[in-house]
Image (tube, rainbow, N blue to C red; front, side, top):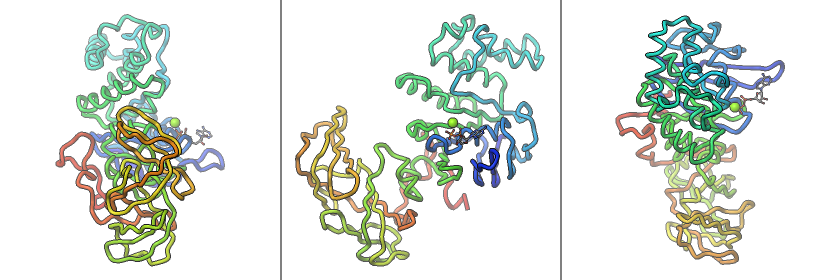
Length: 387
Ligand SMILES: Nc1ncnc2c1ncn2[C@@H]1O[C@H](COP(=O)(O)OP(=O)(O)O)[C@@H](O)[C@H]1O
Ligand SMILES: [Mg+2]
């Protein structure tokens, strides 16, 4: 068992408060990803869990035991960094064995553990090489191997793939997902890459300026973001936001006007809104239909076209402050200067009140409680469970 529990964790450096009261439950075997913009406190939070920084206030527990004052080596954790931090003069074998040697393990036990890790990570052929004779991906595998041999209760990763090129990142991402399944270990993983977060996580923690904005499964955050920050952060290209106002409400809908004059009735718990309220309408690029369709249409003028082959992004001027991003098919013939009609389905709309808080959607998405790659039996944390 390796639960990690954070209760009202605060961290200040001098006068500056960086982590502002974080509560979090990481359950045994879970893959939890911290995402958020650069400087929001992701690494700091990880280093607090590792014991590399002192906690200013709050309680950190591992397996029910408060470990605030326990030194890193006694917490049963291993950390993998972005900079692989390998010893350049040691071979792969020696790098992986180093911590075990320091802990005075027997030669036989060390060989066994390093051999096992090398097999899991496909490093067996490389054990005699020095780090400079390895590719970036291989070096990162050695760094992960060095963590595995310690048989930690919890693995901590701080942007482990950021130094790799795009193709290698995809490959290592898949390897890390496999590793999590093979090792049955609790993993906490920091990244600013939302594709990594979406694909690896059972549970994503969205951080912003030292505060948790939302915790949930990847698809919960995608389909039910609690606020404008999460809505804008999860999903790529990012959600389109349009400021507008409410023209009518009922218990299970709110009607708002669209740029261009049409109205759309969005299935949300409209009861807490009233006519005249300022709201923000959010629609993802992949939900905007080139050429119209759905429940309402808005006109626009194509400003820039990006053809990616599989899909086409249209950046459209449509009576909003920002350009509207529309994801069209790869065979879209749109060109700049064209007039387009954008179709919108009410069920794909998100609505946020004047404080930027989401107005709850009526239909809960069927996959919102499902963790990474798992069947519906495996639930990530749901709001009901979170209390
Ligand atoms: N040792 C430190 N002393 C002072 N400020 C720090 C220290 N470590 C981090 N910070 C500050 O804390 C904030 C969060 O940093 P960090 O956790 O590294 O962000 P992230 O990993 O999300 O990019 C930053 O503003 C950073 O400058
Ligand atoms: Mg960081």
